[in-house]
Image (tube, rainbow, N blue to C red; front, side, top):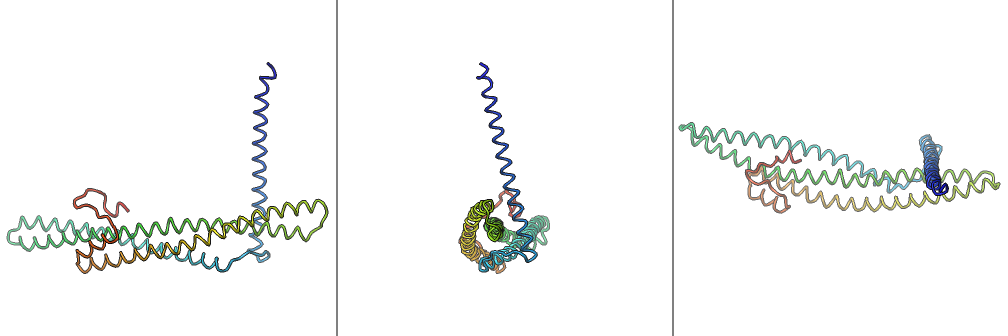
Length: 272
């Protein structure tokens, strides 16, 4: 009976001890890794350490970061345009309603108020259609910038961290290799060689991932922007030319869904 009751307690203590040891090893490895990477980072910053650099890939990464900043500006300006244009359409709607009301109450100016009311209503209708196109443009650019590009930049961040770790363990191995060759040193060199290979494999894998993502991102960016810039140009041109048929045809061509007439759904701006 005594043995039966004490056994679960002993197993629990053993398990707790195992978890504690595992956590300690994890913190120890993290501390060593952090120390080595910090040392490598400062060595590179002050020109004392060597850095693995792929000039072609680094140039592509710089281009992506610059492109993202420019596209973020397009996105910000397009949202401002949506905001201003939405307010103008709302004003046209209110003005048209006021003209229509005065047409009923001013017999001597009924026709004048009437055709002005009709003009504002037509402008409002076309404005809502153009807002649909601009909103679709904004949504697509937002996805490209804040999802597609951001996903690639996250992989680039992982790659840059792996590069720093790789160089840190490479430097560590190089320093040990030029030191004494006693039994203890050889053990440390063997361990350093293993760590070097692990981080080299990780670096090369992420290097490949970044290259592939950059290639597909460029192809996707061209495809998306070709469609969106054509939509934006055709819709804006048709609107300011007063070509209602061409404006509606443009939205159908690019599968842009319009808000149903008289709908109480939120405005294009509110949906954005």
